[in-house]
Length: 344
Image (cartoon, rainbow, N blue to C red; front, side, top):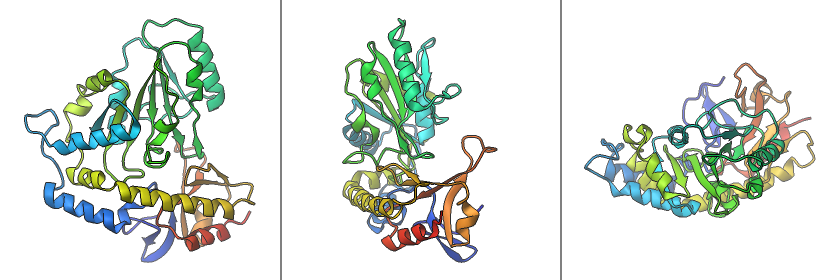
């Protein structure tokens, strides 16, 4: 366990000593990007840190609707609802599932959208089984499929093309917290890879903190009526909305996000090449996450002045998962040092 003395970026300070930092999930490095911080400062000067009112009160701030419109356009959905966090966004999304609806939960669902135990199958087998089960049954209400889009612990981006094989109406709730801001040409997340089918209703939930450095969450819906139902949940009506200062920065930062994604994409290529001959390292070409073998744990790397991600999940008593997570403010030299430290 490392006790950090400041918010980490490409490095972190522990007991007044500097370590290279390959952990966390600030993928685009926005917390240390000066132009973005300037926008955040402007937002604080104009709006303050918080908006002290419910979204359903008789006083409104159009900035929220502007932010939601940007997210709807980005995800190509009918409507978007902002929340305080990705977790509350997920909880609001699953709350509107009709009573008695049949649900199919994938092998990896974040607790925000998890209704029962995750499937023990691998994703491909689960997808095939789910397709066959739905197609051979009739349902009073559309069955609901729940899944994360990305498994950041195993460096997987899930393939949802199986949805095209389902022959009746379905609702698909996807937590895209680790895809939003990263996947797609514009950072639109998993929405760029989902089958476009009139029989599929999508409810995409996500955190905006992972890549975009905005302390907020959102639900983007392909059906406007569904968005209206979500706005009636207590998760929306009874909580303080996200910081308007952060949303101001978000609305102004599209070019900065794009530049940071391009930097990160180049760094991913560099590290993938450096690790190409190390067969025990797992990664996905589209993700800044590199899975390390068991023996290369946090103690091993700390002796080389490097911090990696190393913890057990979802069972805290289970085996630790070792990962190196890069962000857009790392340098080629940082990556070379990481690669040099990986001796298999």
